[in-house]
Image (cartoon, rainbow, N blue to C red; front, side):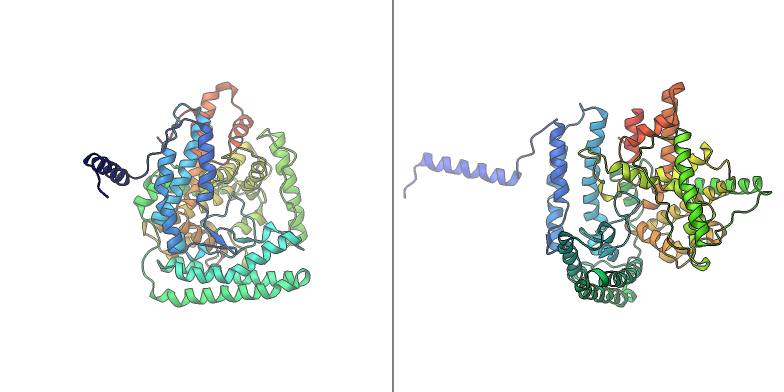
Length: 539
């Protein structure tokens, strides 16, 4: 076919235009200043960050993760095209929450890579509900959470339960292919976790034998796969080298861009060392003040422990209401039942504290009261638990601060020796924060971190092979900054309280402060500071 010169020129121009478009890539996303567009983006992102699931088996293979990572720049460009500058502060905070979650996914792909580095990521069963919005540290999508089921199971629940049980061997088989970046410490905590999961599956088999005996073989297959996975980890452990920490530079970047903490690694270390010194010094002052008083005594029997618990829960709620600490809705409850008494030789740190006085950990149980409140939160962004544990400075910081705030408000006036326990608990949390920081700077490996905690904690209350310190170390290795969030978050709460009181002047009340704070949801502490004072800590 003969083509005219004019037609040829047109075709050439069209070809050049198409080639130019191909080189430039897709058109940039349209600019927007609509809050509704942010809500739509958030909903879409929440679906995007989930793995593909087939037969209850989530896909964390290298190909699947590569495909997900390749689309992150597209999502970042779309979010950047939404301009929140003209919005009220509360909506600008929502924008920062969404951006932090997107940064969290990118950081997972670039640095943490839990699917290829962390055996603990492949959790197959969880027996207890966390006291915070989501499980501390990364884990696979769709874990079998026993605490979410009521036995005997309904017909609908049976189908899901069977599916999740039956998927465990395939999940762990996939994990063996995915875990290609091993380090000794991450393997060690993984081995311990799989040993605990095997015991949990054995207990589940006994539980099902009476109500769903047909499921017992499925549990047996899941347990065999779990034991084989642990043996695979044990076989691979001797050949592994290297530290598991992410390094100070990445730690700083993670804290600032994902968890929105306005302090560097070095500043957090300074805060934690100061809080450790202060707690130990004031412990000695309290002991001096109380030296003529009888020592605190552990319960002599299970019945005595039950009586103490019931009285403490009742007195705690009475204190909150009578002293106008915060508004306590009728739906708020704390468990006042005790099922067993731990033998003395197995009493780890928090059991020791709880057996001497119930109040310190009841104060920390504000976690459970917050969860009850958050179940009623209908906010389109804040009404769901935020991903990547970016709530840690708010949730753990508040629970830790509340122990000391309640001491200052007079909770221990009738039992001064209980104040000693508050200082001991803060010291332990500062010690764990230092563990977190030094694990990621490379100054500690797993064993030296545990040895430090055992040696530094007052009165030898930490069992060196106990689940408390091993569980904490596992979280800190896999979720940088979680250990510091207790102490640094506490300091942020105190800073907010002081500034809020200054702004309110003679109109300040503690109840007004807490009711205001609680109404805003479990979001990073720096964002709360912005909303409640008008001052941004991170630009």
